[in-house]
Image (cartoon, rainbow, N blue to C red; front, side, top):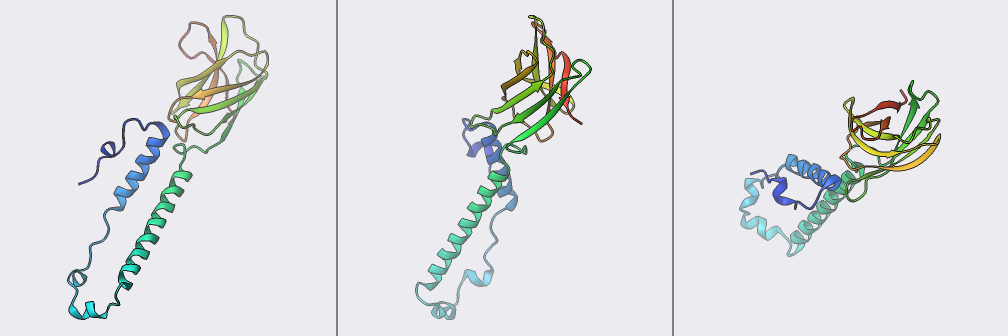
Amino acid sequence: MRPDFDDLIDDDVRGAERERLERVHELLVAAGPPAELPPHLENPTLAMTLARRPGRGRRRVALIAAIAAVLVLAFVLGYLAGNRGGGLASQTSLRMTGTKAAPNALASLRILPVDSSGNWPMRLSATGLPKLGHKWYYEVFLVRDGKIYAPCGSFVSTGTVDVTLNAPYRLKPHDTWVVTKQERGDRTAGTVVLRPTT
């Protein structure tokens, strides 16, 4: 019977850590149980028993088991290190250029490594953004599958800005971001002023 992942892991394990453990679980389930012992070794003959040196077989089995355990541990640790963060690089930088609404704007959005709670801190450095009136601000939105998905933080600008933001979501390899101009009180995404450089 296939073991259920949710029965093995407590509910308090969340975010990227839960995703990593679930991927390892799927690999172990896919690998399946170890091979069956051949029938001719299940019931050793008297000659086979006498041919063994006392203790040597047990040492050999213990050595093989230790080597197998080290190889499995190295594989799991390597897999976890190589797949940290659900497919995104541990540090990604996205170059952004202004749209018609902010033609002189340029920016760089740096995605930092995910923290232990599953939050993705990010740093936006931008220049050339128009100064907005007191009822306006800028918002960074996560874009998934070509559609605005969720907000990651807001800021105001005097032309040059360097702000820390946060994406409290599970990020996917093809996620990207845009910056919009927002009017206070309006909950829908406003006019895009910065988008990824193509």
